[in-house]
Image 1 (cartoon, rainbow, N blue to C red):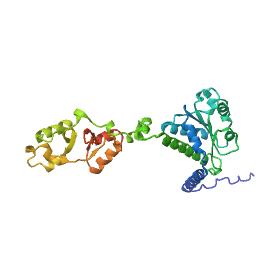
Image 2 (tube, rainbow, N blue to C red; image 1 turned 120 degrees about the vertical axis):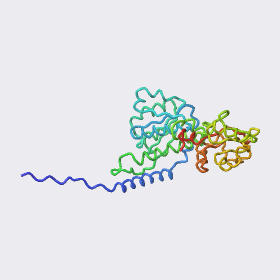
Image 3 (cartoon, rainbow, N blue to C red; image 1 turned 90 degrees about the horizontal axis):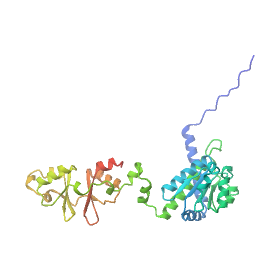
Image 4 (tube, one colour; image 1 turned 45 degrees about the vertical axis):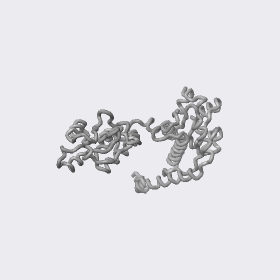
Length: 328
């Protein structure tokens, strides 16, 4: 008679929320260790990358390669031309992507990743500046580097302590630190950022009022002495539900539907300047479209006139313009 099979039922898993919390705490502790142990030599690294005439080449294998690709993308989108080069492909021709005018960032937790060997040799042969991000100061990668950014020996967040978790989080954060330091050194501002992010929600949030506002003949404009009958025709023809009262090019007031309701009695016997609300809310043409939308929402209005520093009327932005552009 066969013996009963041993009980091989798996041990019940811990609560998922508890596991997730432990992972986050472990990784955040790794980031604290990284911040506390950050070498002053990072300033030399940033200076080296800042003076690079070509591109910043970032490479790594496996999970480090995925992190390297993200770092390269972040650098490129924040004003530092960068490119990810796969170490395997580099050994089969892509070393030609790395020139004497470039700088190289190589990522390896152990510092002994075999696939990085050809890139290391290439940088040494052609005197290409090389930055190493690794956990082991005595490793081959660290010893060959011109600049060493050392990761603390923090435990990985997985149950077996082997899956790249804390180490990749620290590496990615270190890449962000380099990108932000380079941004500030280059004076990379919102306008610069928008050049590299013209599409999607992010691009929409960086649009200026001048990018979408209506101008010239599209504007509903009347003079202060325009009879209200003509002013109403102008409001109706232009379709914004408002009219700008302008003299000498300057915005003197705005007529809205609310102004019409408040002045119904004897309206047609009056002129635009008598009915308009003086000193209306305006916005600078170069202000962010998101700011204009915020003002319109707060004031419960649907249109906003844009004027320059001298009060000269430049355009009009309607709430629908902001929504069509993707601003929320």
